[in-house]
Image (tube, rainbow, N blue to C red; front, side):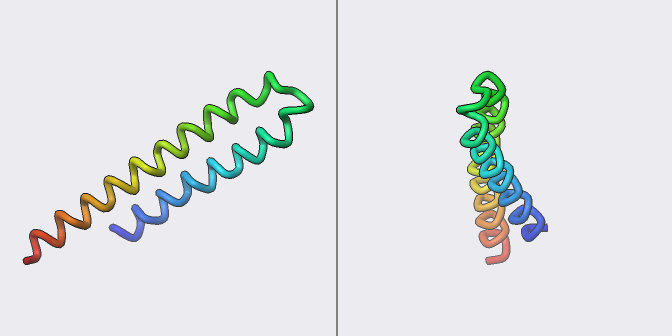
Length: 67
C-alpha cells in the first residue's frame, strides 16, 4: 500500500508541472484563461506535500509498531 501512496504523490507533482507549463505558454496569448491552471498548480503542489507528509508519518508509525 505504501508504494501506491508514493506513486499518487508523484502524480500530483506531474499535474502541477503540466499546469505550470500551460500557464507559461498561455500567459501571453490569453492571461484570463491561465488562472484555472495557476489554481491547479497550487492545489497540486499542496497535495503533493500533504500526501508526502502523510506517507512519511504512516511509514514511521508502521516502523514503530514493528519494533
